[in-house]
Length: 308
Image (cartoon, rainbow, N blue to C red):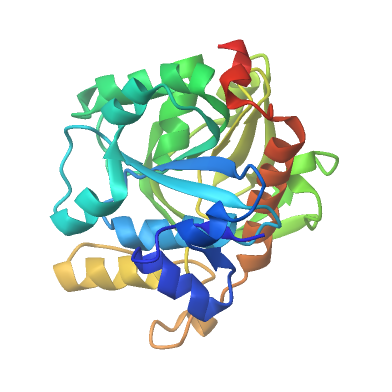
């Protein structure tokens, strides 16, 4: 089954060219089926790039997906055209007022790691999203800073500044081969990392109900399951495109910002060489497994979601 997105959303053409099954509103309305409702709270400045990345992974699953784009109500982005935001995004305040519910909610990262959580301009509203998600989203997936913010809000686990940016492709160990979220995973895998902060394993271990599924000897815990809240927190970037780290590296070089060549990314560490994607298959496995777990456990009537 395909992912249902507006025909004029840029991701529609991108995914169609890649062979991902997409479906228009008209096509979807002719199928007698309840699609899974997946929301994307997009906190990244490059909205369209992030939409494409997550739509690609969600759209590769065998179920029909109704993909909804959500933004913070007051926060404005300078990197995406106002027309795009007006056409395709709804502010969280509107979603909240509607009373609608979602089978799954993804909360992206944001390039604001240097700030304390409480110093983020939209922190209060994001906390409202977290609380709302407990009764209006069957499952939640926090990504990078979004995952760090969630695990801090719900469990008090702190983020810590690193002496230098963790940047590149790092090997991660499969810590829970029996987990349904890691079905099909190798014993280890390569995952892109791009962050100035870390979550520490001993602090995660101190919280009852949290279990680490993927971790790296070099860059620490990566994927954490929160069984109590039916949530996953991932601190790294399986959703990245092949050239996302290159874009970040080139941006910093052009701006004169000190940055190391991303580890284990370019062949022979040569920035003029084309990067190789060594994480794509595991990205599809993880998000496909997440969607499958939602499908197996979500109520048919979303008004029954978490009993709310």
